[in-house]
Length: 190
Image 1 (cartoon, rainbow, N blue to C red):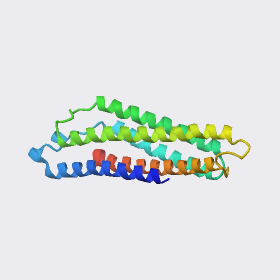
Image 2 (cartoon, rainbow, N blue to C red; image 1 turned 180 degrees about the horizontal axis):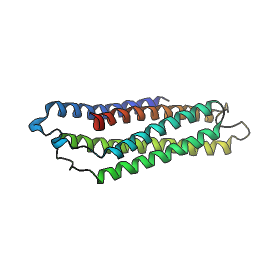
Image 3 (cartoon, rainbow, N blue to C red; image 1 turned 45 degrees about the vertical axis):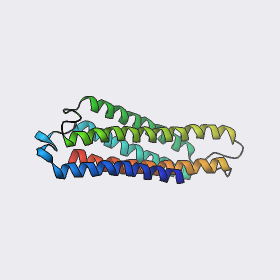
Image 4 (cartoon, rainbow, N blue to C red; image 1 turned 120 degrees about the vertical axis):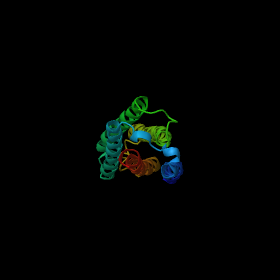
């Protein structure tokens, strides 16, 4: 539980540095090179990435809510769907980098966008990996603690740690949705 909050803190500082660079370069606009000719990243792909990340976060939250109700299968289905969604978002983000109408150092916007895209890939892969390991642990716990109940309801220490890990992972997914929303606004709406 605490490790998840510390991880969110580390990612917050990482993305805060990018937000600072974004607003500093935008306000400075040296030589009118913040965004020459109004260039922008492909907005359709950006919208798709944003929508998939937010939908995956909502699925993870829904799955945890269902697990608290005792429905482990609903959590597993929503978890695997969220992992698949994040992998699709990562694939779209990588593909988007190959289709950009600008080069990485061509403007302040381009530099910030490339930095965000790389950080976003790292963020999404980290979230997908964490959720996938929780799903794998659930399968393992179901086989080990079959006589004590499911990992969603068991009173055993392994199941309690598992539920705390799922809660922290779900909190991290909420953080991913917030970060995706903020930077979607920065790069596609402003």
